[in-house]
Length: 221
Image 1 (cartoon, rainbow, N blue to C red):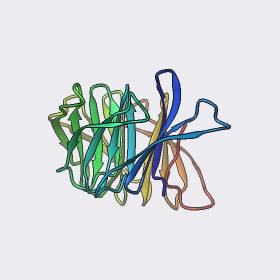
Image 2 (image 1 turned 45 degrees about the vertical axis):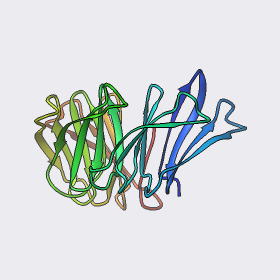
Image 3 (image 1 turned 45 degrees about the horizontal axis):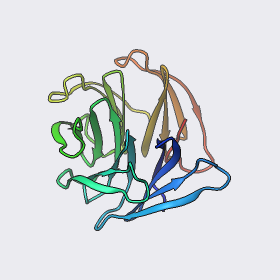
Image 4 (image 1 turned 30 degrees about the horizontal axis):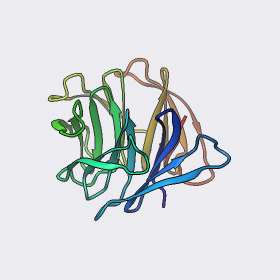
C-alpha cells in the first residue's frame, strides 16, 4: 500500500520517491507516460508512512523504525546515512529550512538536518494533545493534524521551545494539510476537505468545505 510520494529532480531527471510497507521506491518519471522503477529500498522492521526530500536526501517516516535518512544522489543505489530510532511511531515528515519535522504519536519532533549524516534533535511539539497524524510548516508556524483533536498551530521560531498559538476544531480523522500562498487545504476524513485563510496564524479563517465521496486521507497541490 502506497502511503506517500514526492517528486524530486535528481541529476536533472524527475523522479518519484515513494513510501509504503517496508519499502521505499525510486521511479524515473522524466517521461510520465513511461515511468520506470529505478530501485527498491527495503527497510527492516519499518512501515514507511511518510516521505520528504531535500536536495539529494530522502527522509522517511518509517513507523516504529523511526526516521531514516538516505542519500539518493545515485537513484539506483540509495545509501542509508543516518537513523533516529527513538522518536515513537513516525507518521509523517516535512522539511522546512534546516529542520525536519516529524509527526509521531502524541508528539511531533524537530530535528536539525544541517548535516543529514549527523541529525541533531532540536525540540518537540506537544500541541493540544491528540494523535499527531501529519504536520506542515509555513512562515515559522507548524500546523499539526491531530487525528482526533483538530488542527494545532504552533510557533516554532525557536525549535527548542515551541509555543502553542491556537487549536482549530475542524473535525475528526484530520490527516494532512498543504499550503498555497495564504491558503491551507486540510484533508479531514469523513468531513472531506476544508480550506482556511492562514495569513494570520493566530486567527485562521474558515472559507469552505468540499465533501468527498469517501474518507479524505491525503491531498497534494
